[in-house]
Length: 30
Image (cartoon, rainbow, N blue to C red; front, side, top):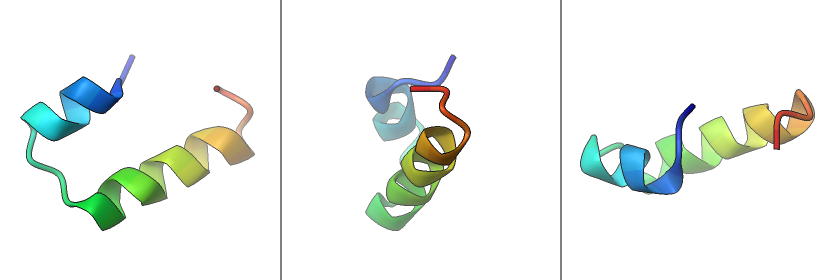
């Protein structure tokens, strides 16, 4: 699974992280 550290290691921008977090929350994954 993706974690905050994984996202940071992959150098995804803050907007990208927020987008993925929002998607996970909407899908009730986290």
